[in-house]
Image 1: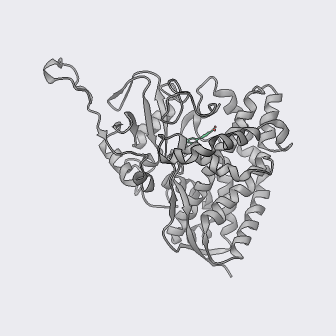
Image 2: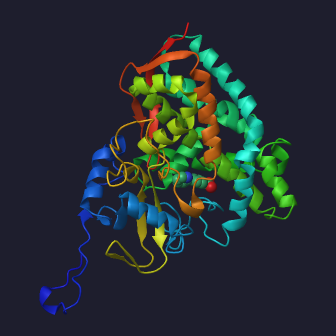
Image 3: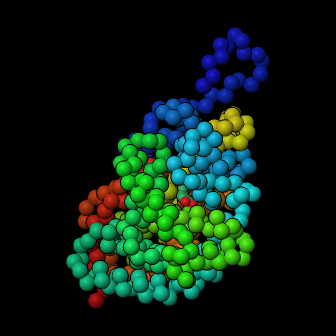
Length: 411
Ligand code: PQS
């Protein structure tokens, strides 16, 4: 808030009174259960200041949506984490997709959008369906009580995605820890980032070493990216960084999205019954779970100029934290926002962002979820929680440690 004395205030509009919140949105309490903070953020106003970091924040659907779509006013090239790349050296070479704006963003985005398009993914569907059936059969051959995070949500992406990229066999156990650190590193340097520091050089070097043409399989998303370099759509220098984007953003995100879906059904057995009666609801189920849980909770933009948003004046060069998870439960936009409800239309959620940076891998995530759910539907009558799920704290992801479930099988 400005500290101008009332007596020197000329007869102009009153200095904007932007509400200030003191709570740390990256503190363990908020990360463990973000919903009360989200409600306070939305109630405080459309634009809020977060005193803990001297930044701006938005948690209502309308303003989050508007800011996401205004890439001219809210840039990504200064980083989508707390760190401002114009002042601090990025900890890794910036992503050509995530941490770029037009025109530099255009060619990498175009190439990856084609590589991961629904059309391109069509040929994977039969194999992923078979892989899902195999995994579900393996899991269901074991005890009827198990951890659905390790057993299904981690196991399935790791079974299908690295092979689809064409990643070489060794070292795949590095994928999840690397992704976990990248998503922590968008936040402040708190204990979650410090926990990752000792291995960051090793993990980063391993990921970088897996992106060159010679170590990628002759067919797969990796080879497709290199083929685009051969066609001159991107440069050979850009290709490995675009492969890196797949390995960074394609694993942890889908693990926690699948966990969110499985949790949603375990916590709402009636919706599982409904899905079994009409399996065409799998796409709705996917988006509704993404809306409700928002596996990617937040990211930042940086203002390119002085902006006025909902009456608040944000100067140029400021970090703005956008709360996708809060927007996805904004009662101004969603009826009964906390319900998991397959009869609503969840489209328009901002769980994948919105605008030119909207998740380019979302069709991969959707295909994984559909394959897994369609394999489970005929075999599992009921899925229920047997204890409280454990969270895995991450500065950006709404992540899961374990999801203890019991399944009742179809005879
Ligand atoms: C990359 C792309 C996207 C990459 C925040 C970050 C991301 C959602 C929210 C993400 C991270 C990394 N996705 O291109 O390396």
